[in-house]
Image (cartoon, rainbow, N blue to C red; front, side, top):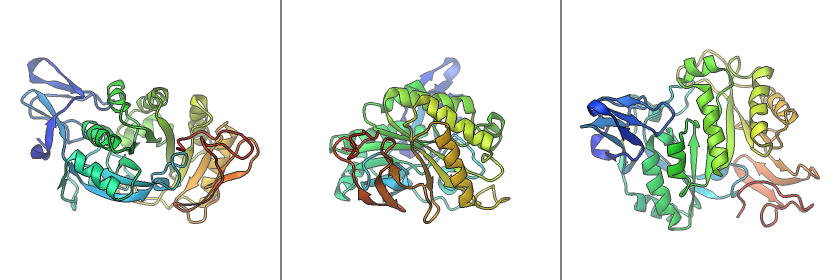
Length: 341
C-alpha cells in the first residue's frame, strides 16, 4: 500500500527486476517488492514497476545545537536545522521517536510540504550552519536528504545524518558529495538480540559503519546503554574494541536509557553504569568516550590525549571553555580529530 503517494517521486536507489518487481538499495535490507507493495520501512513502494520514495515534505523541523545530535567533534556550538520524514527500516522496542518512525502510529504529526530550496533557505535564515536529517531513519529517504543537502551546500551549509548505519555502497555514494557528518547508533553487539529487538542484522550494521568511515565522512557513534540488554562488560568491551579497530579517534557517546515504547520492563540507566562503560571504552583503546543525557554527568568534556588538558568544556548542550586553535590544535600542539572549521 502506498504511503503518502502524493508526496513521493521515483527513487534513484533501486533496480528494476523481472515481472514488474523492483529491488531497493537505499538500505541493507535490499527489499524486493512486487507492484503495489512497500518495503520494510513502509514508505518506499513499487508503483507500476517503479520505486517511489518520499519527497517534498518534513514531519517536523527544529533548530538544535550540534551537541544534541550528538556530535562533539564537529563545529562545537554550531546551530543545526534538524528535520525528519516518516518511517524506519528497524523496529526497535526501545524507540523514542516511535510516533514518527512508525507509519501507522497514532498521533503521527501531519506532513508539511516544503521544497529542498525552501528548507535550506529556512536553515540559513535561522542561523544554522548544518542541516541534519534525523527523527526517523534518514537512509530510507536518502534521495530527499541529498536534494536538501545539495541546496544547503550551495548556501555554504554542512550536512549530517543521524542514522542506524544500515547503509549500502549505493546510498553512501549518493550522499558523499553533499554530506559531511554521520552519526551511527550502534545498539549492541549481540546478533540475536539485534535481530529480535531491532529487526536488523548486526554484521550489516558493522559493515555500514566500515563503509561510512572508509568513505571519509566524519563519524561519531552512539550507544544507548540499556540495563540487562547491552550493558554487560563483555558486550560493551566488544563494541569498543570494534570501533577502536577502525580508529581510536572515533568519538563514542554512551547515553542513558529511559523506559519507552515497547520496552518499559526495566528502569533507567544509572549514571554509574555509563561511567563504567566509559572506562571500558577507554581501556579498549578509544581516546574519546563520552557520557550523555545525564544531568551533570562526568565524561562530557574533550581532553587532549597527549597533555590531558581539557580543551572543550561542555555543560549539557552548551560549550563553555574552548581552547582549540585552527584545525583543532591543542595548545600543546596535538591535533584533535574532527571538523573544526
